[in-house]
Image (cartoon, rainbow, N blue to C red; front, side, top):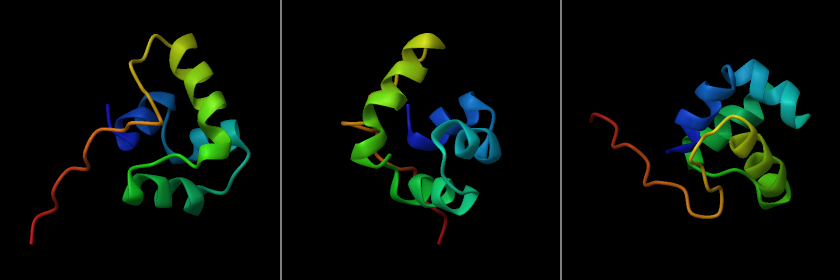
Length: 68
């Protein structure tokens, strides 16, 4: 599961931002970088577990290739 998939499973950028206490642009950056900041890994693991999601923020999937 990519970071984008995880964020969408949480309800989108606004929901993820509210859940993690960050701004929506910060969440957009996570999606672009395909990583959740290390300080939020534990919270991300807890949220993924609570929702039955297979997400590991320490080893995210490779980002999708963008069309040229």
